[in-house]
Length: 140
Image (cartoon, rainbow, N blue to C red):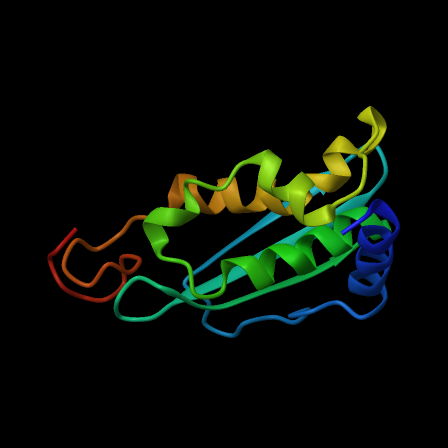
Protein backbone atom coordinates (compact mmCIF):
# COMPACT_ATOMS: atom_id res chain seq x y z
CA UNK A 1 0.00 0.00 0.00
CA UNK A 2 1.44 3.39 -0.85
CA UNK A 3 1.40 6.37 1.51
CA UNK A 4 -1.61 7.96 -0.23
CA UNK A 5 -3.74 4.87 0.48
CA UNK A 6 -2.54 4.82 4.10
CA UNK A 7 -3.42 8.50 4.40
CA UNK A 8 -6.93 7.76 3.11
CA UNK A 9 -7.22 4.89 5.61
CA UNK A 10 -6.10 7.17 8.46
CA UNK A 11 -8.63 9.83 7.48
CA UNK A 12 -11.38 7.20 7.18
CA UNK A 13 -10.63 5.88 10.69
CA UNK A 14 -10.82 9.45 11.97
CA UNK A 15 -14.10 10.20 10.18
CA UNK A 16 -15.66 6.76 10.83
CA UNK A 17 -13.84 5.41 13.91
CA UNK A 18 -14.14 1.74 14.75
CA UNK A 19 -15.11 0.77 18.29
CA UNK A 20 -15.64 4.33 19.54
CA UNK A 21 -17.77 3.63 22.60
CA UNK A 22 -17.55 2.77 26.28
CA UNK A 23 -17.44 -0.89 27.31
CA UNK A 24 -19.64 -1.20 30.39
CA UNK A 25 -17.86 -3.47 32.85
CA UNK A 26 -14.56 -3.49 30.95
CA UNK A 27 -11.84 -5.47 32.73
CA UNK A 28 -9.35 -2.67 32.16
CA UNK A 29 -9.33 0.95 31.11
CA UNK A 30 -6.82 3.77 31.05
CA UNK A 31 -6.68 7.32 29.78
CA UNK A 32 -3.82 8.99 27.94
CA UNK A 33 -3.48 12.69 27.22
CA UNK A 34 -1.27 14.84 25.05
CA UNK A 35 -0.94 18.07 27.01
CA UNK A 36 0.74 19.90 24.14
CA UNK A 37 -2.30 19.73 21.84
CA UNK A 38 -5.19 18.57 24.02
CA UNK A 39 -5.67 15.10 22.50
CA UNK A 40 -7.11 12.54 24.89
CA UNK A 41 -8.27 8.97 24.70
CA UNK A 42 -9.52 6.28 27.05
CA UNK A 43 -8.91 2.68 26.04
CA UNK A 44 -11.27 -0.07 27.28
CA UNK A 45 -10.44 -3.79 27.14
CA UNK A 46 -12.45 -6.89 28.10
CA UNK A 47 -11.11 -10.46 28.17
CA UNK A 48 -12.79 -13.82 27.76
CA UNK A 49 -12.20 -16.76 30.13
CA UNK A 50 -9.12 -17.82 28.16
CA UNK A 51 -7.34 -14.48 28.45
CA UNK A 52 -8.14 -13.38 24.90
CA UNK A 53 -9.28 -9.81 24.22
CA UNK A 54 -13.00 -10.21 23.60
CA UNK A 55 -13.69 -6.51 23.15
CA UNK A 56 -11.68 -3.32 22.78
CA UNK A 57 -13.03 0.20 22.43
CA UNK A 58 -12.11 3.82 23.05
CA UNK A 59 -13.51 7.23 23.75
CA UNK A 60 -11.62 10.41 22.99
CA UNK A 61 -11.14 13.66 21.20
CA UNK A 62 -8.25 15.07 19.26
CA UNK A 63 -6.51 15.21 15.94
CA UNK A 64 -6.92 12.73 13.10
CA UNK A 65 -3.67 10.94 13.95
CA UNK A 66 -4.52 10.29 17.61
CA UNK A 67 -8.11 9.23 17.01
CA UNK A 68 -7.32 7.07 13.98
CA UNK A 69 -4.51 5.45 15.97
CA UNK A 70 -6.92 4.57 18.78
CA UNK A 71 -9.43 3.20 16.26
CA UNK A 72 -6.81 1.06 14.53
CA UNK A 73 -5.42 -0.16 17.85
CA UNK A 74 -8.82 -1.41 19.04
CA UNK A 75 -9.16 -3.38 15.80
CA UNK A 76 -5.72 -4.93 16.32
CA UNK A 77 -6.29 -5.80 19.99
CA UNK A 78 -9.46 -7.81 19.41
CA UNK A 79 -8.63 -11.51 19.54
CA UNK A 80 -5.12 -11.06 20.93
CA UNK A 81 -4.03 -13.05 23.98
CA UNK A 82 -3.29 -11.06 27.11
CA UNK A 83 0.39 -12.06 27.07
CA UNK A 84 0.76 -10.86 23.47
CA UNK A 85 -0.35 -7.32 24.33
CA UNK A 86 3.06 -6.75 25.92
CA UNK A 87 4.71 -7.48 22.58
CA UNK A 88 3.15 -4.48 20.83
CA UNK A 89 5.59 -1.62 20.23
CA UNK A 90 5.51 2.00 19.08
CA UNK A 91 6.66 0.66 15.71
CA UNK A 92 3.42 -1.30 15.44
CA UNK A 93 1.47 1.94 15.86
CA UNK A 94 3.52 3.66 13.15
CA UNK A 95 2.97 0.67 10.84
CA UNK A 96 -0.80 0.72 11.41
CA UNK A 97 -0.96 4.46 10.71
CA UNK A 98 1.14 3.97 7.59
CA UNK A 99 2.18 7.58 7.12
CA UNK A 100 5.33 9.47 8.05
CA UNK A 101 4.97 10.85 11.57
CA UNK A 102 6.79 14.10 12.22
CA UNK A 103 8.48 14.60 15.61
CA UNK A 104 5.73 17.01 16.66
CA UNK A 105 3.08 14.27 16.03
CA UNK A 106 4.76 11.36 17.82
CA UNK A 107 2.69 11.84 21.00
CA UNK A 108 -0.46 11.96 18.88
CA UNK A 109 0.48 8.74 17.10
CA UNK A 110 1.29 6.94 20.35
CA UNK A 111 -1.72 8.07 22.41
CA UNK A 112 -3.42 4.65 22.22
CA UNK A 113 -0.12 2.88 22.88
CA UNK A 114 0.38 5.02 26.00
CA UNK A 115 -3.08 4.06 27.30
CA UNK A 116 -2.32 0.38 26.61
CA UNK A 117 0.96 0.63 28.54
CA UNK A 118 -0.92 2.08 31.51
CA UNK A 119 -3.33 -0.85 31.39
CA UNK A 120 -0.46 -3.35 31.26
CA UNK A 121 1.22 -1.79 34.31
CA UNK A 122 -1.79 -2.35 36.56
CA UNK A 123 -3.40 -5.40 34.94
CA UNK A 124 -2.99 -8.39 37.24
CA UNK A 125 -3.66 -11.71 35.57
CA UNK A 126 -5.23 -14.74 37.25
CA UNK A 127 -2.94 -17.71 36.53
CA UNK A 128 -5.91 -20.10 36.48
CA UNK A 129 -8.38 -18.19 34.30
CA UNK A 130 -5.86 -15.93 32.55
CA UNK A 131 -8.07 -12.89 33.17
CA UNK A 132 -7.75 -9.83 35.33
CA UNK A 133 -8.12 -10.27 39.07
CA UNK A 134 -11.75 -10.10 39.90
CA UNK A 135 -12.58 -13.62 38.74
CA UNK A 136 -12.92 -14.41 42.48
CA UNK A 137 -10.55 -17.33 42.68
CA UNK A 138 -7.20 -17.53 44.45
CA UNK A 139 -5.18 -18.10 41.30
CA UNK A 140 -3.32 -14.79 41.40
